[in-house]
Image 1 (cartoon, rainbow, N blue to C red):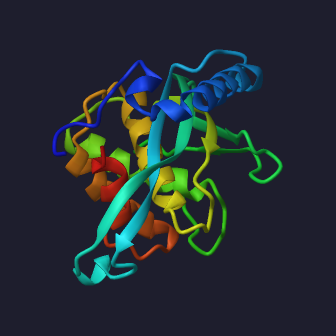
Image 2 (image 1 turned 135 degrees about the horizontal axis):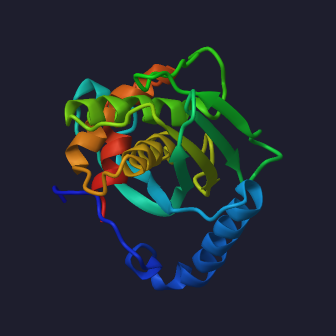
Length: 219
């Protein structure tokens, strides 16, 4: 429902009971893999689920009614931050390194990043979430934008191209990660959805907001 994106310390608050054993192993692997990759522990994990749509496929951006719901499959981003000495750098890797190559890129002093919508690059979705979160941080007068390094390890169980909105889940999780990296633990759900909808269009996705709203507002 309306309000702020929930913050929790327990997987019991996130997953159904029959999924907990598998999720505990998955999260443990994510955190240990993060430490192996970056030589330090993750500070937090941002998460956003995929969705299924019961009625009304590809009509939300024409303002017709739809009935979506979130699913257990999700995108996780383990994150650690540090002050930037020079150009802020994002290092982002994926537990499926055979499919998604590790990348790094710099962030402009105003928090801007370049996105090429013609390139099918998996990190573009993180960049779009970063871009949207940066605009929201500026709107709220948050300082320190473009002054942090971020190390990120992604783990997604929403199948790419499977019709469960993996891209929206990735963008929402990315925006949340950037907000939290800048000390913002309180994120309004409506503002998150609005920024994610606009941000995802930067990678060439014509979104009406159903995917993002289902990911953020579902309980």
